[in-house]
Amino acid sequence: VAVIGGSYTMPSGVALEDAYHSILEDRLNRESPGRSHEFINFGVGGYATKNKLATLRRKVLEYRPDLILFVLDGTKLADETGTKRRFVPKERETNFFQSFAWQLFLKSPLVASFSNDRESYLEKQRKSLAKLDGELQELAEISRAHSTPICVVELDHDPSSARLAEAVGDLVRQNGLHFANTVPAFAGVRFRDSSVDPLDPHPNPAAHRICAQALYDDL
Image (cartoon, rainbow, N blue to C red; front, side, top):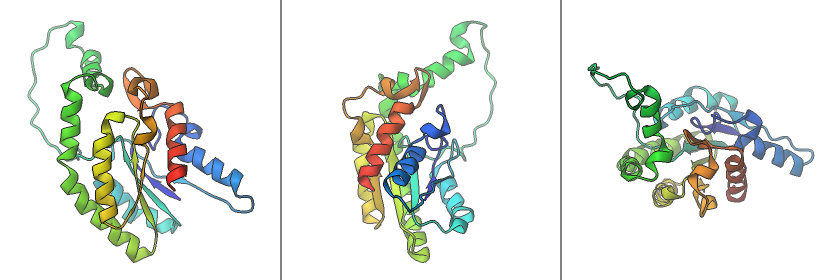
């Protein structure tokens, strides 16, 4: 099983053995004596869907996997990797509230989730659904050409992403691909309780276990 994803898949903030795909691999091997399951991790932090598609074409297909998990980590659909902005230095005062640490804190999804910034983030992702549709069409073509099933995984532990995840699922199914969604498994769970720490929104080991169970059920 080839697993293509971003920082959640890499995994960032937890040990490799605590990652959802490692948990799935161990469980399937325990439950299937005489058959070996191997999950090959192609997760790279910061990868957008176009990077994942390139990884699929240039690396993953050489392994001839029986199944491909194409993971949308954190419901991140917008592609910011190619954004170019002219650098304009700003005058800064030497105090904590102008420091890098404070700016990083303000950008944390844990802060944004309790403000209008979180809704702005989700709206930005919703505007990228048309782009995602084109990428899903490409995925479907690859699946047919290589006779390899591809499951698009909505891997997120933030309940506020539920409606967006449903929209993604509709597009995935319209393109004839399989879909798995971890978001419903976190209904009633506070985002901060399933994250690594207050400044790191990546899923913690407990969240990875929940994701692994949700994927097991879907698959």
